[in-house]
Amino acid sequence: MSTKTELLRYLDDNFGTYVSGEKLAKELGISRAAVNKAAKTLKRNGYKIYSRTSQGYCIREKADILSEASLEGLLKYPCRLKVFDSIGSTNNYAKTIEIGDTPVVIVANSQTAGKGRLGRTFESPADTGLYLTVGIRPGFDLAKSPFITIATAVAVCHAIDEVCGISPKIKWVNDIFYRDRKVCGILTEAQTNLETGRIDSLIIGIGINCFPGELSPDLDGIAGPISDEYNSFSRTRLAAAVVNHLLEMLPAISERTFLSEYRRRCFILGKGIMVHPMNGHRPIKARAIDVDDNGGLVVEYMEGIRMREMETLASGEVTIRPDDY
Image (cartoon, rainbow, N blue to C red; front, side, top):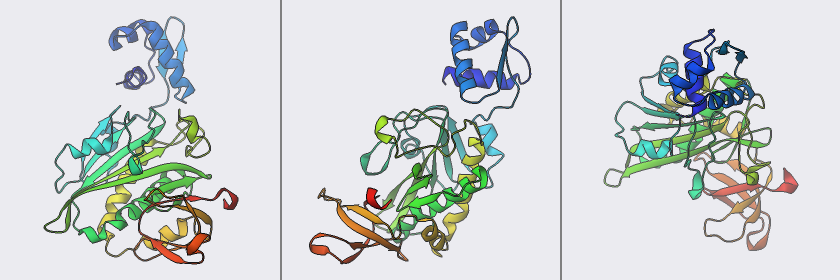
């Protein structure tokens, strides 16, 4: 657990009471200088921490700390819940445990090896994001797997609507955008039984940029936070809302009732895009036309030998053309 998190938990446990720097240093096993540095960082991150000479430090507004205790009371469905201050990857951890009839929910304050699609990494700085995985044993066959990510994207949008009071959009197939920046990525992984054609376990990873964090320069202008104000909403409430909406939506996979909303939120429809072939060939100019009833992206190519040809993409990568954003 990080020094910041340990200090925040201790002050929150002693809510409204000043605790001396000397006592904090002794209880946490760190120096007084480290206590002071952590307290200043927490203040910059929006926590209502006060300090007084000879009295120490005090928090005057209950902190939003991700924990099993704070989350379990907000979940509407029985879950096996595990919360980490830091972990390599919530998806990887989910693969190490047995997933039975009760959903598994893993939540982390930070990841050191967050996973994105197509082998990419997902940057997961501490205190500013929300990184969670839901592991379930689904009751549907492999043919319905394309709808899992689509349903998850809609469920995440519902949760952000509910907790943050904004209306995010979706970029096919699995990215959530707000203010023209990616605020959430979704990575769905499945372990299948080839004999039965059914999914034995389904692992759904969701990473959300909640507040301003330390992201790589190459993500500048691409990724961004939901809010520019630290702690302007509760990450605990958002985590619970994501899980609740997702577990409510997954049983309706067969009905595909979420498709119409997915289309409505899919902001690339009608826009010029670049289709990035999986074979590594150069991107092709196209226009996004529609999302079909199977969740595929209908595109019309705008150049080359396939000019004016229509195709439905079942998977892959597309980006908005800068000249048509």
